[in-house]
Length: 301
Image (cartoon, rainbow, N blue to C red; front, side):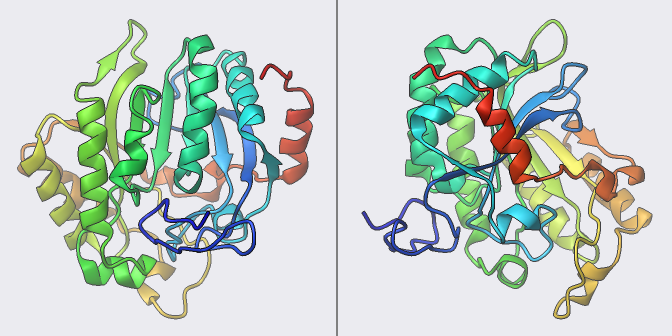
């Protein structure tokens, strides 16, 4: 079957040659507890992350370049992924966090359908938002918490930084579908989110005006939306074409974004300290690690 799963519409037979995502089989790059998500996601228990290799967006500044642009990891079947979901739940974490699942979303839906009757913690769908609405509809009733990025507003910016001039139109439609499925954020007695949507945005050096346009859209959509405004940008690699990406975010740039957040009437927010802009928070993507973990995952399905 030729792949039109995501907005790239590569229309390639992925078993024969790769499209933009550069993958075919479900490729898992890391299975581990993660302690550095938003407080209501990680908290003291941690978030049970399943990182998928490959990506359909390929931002120039990607901090997971090691697995997104140069995919490596362990291939798994739908049934084996369902086993992994139960295994992660048994780690005692607050939730199951599916990171960059877009290019496998059809098979993720199948795995969730198998495992969902045995899951008693929330499933988090952690995405760039470069998603088709039809693909997200397959996840209705299977995903409890959506954690979408809203990366760019201006088409020239998204074309420059991700070769996706249609990003904003696609992403806002996708987030609209996520809000339809999970219109209200619900938290448990310990403060962990159990259902809802948190929109993430990474403030980029020299692109604060684009950040402000994104905040305008969020405010106009719903001033009660939860927003995670992130300052954790660091230079993952030198960029010869976009010099602005070759430095850290200035403190005054992030302050300007935070001030604007308040000025447009948004009030449910998560913010970061400048110390978060470091590689120290970047997970280690080691194929041997994930292969070793999979050896300990019981076969259930």
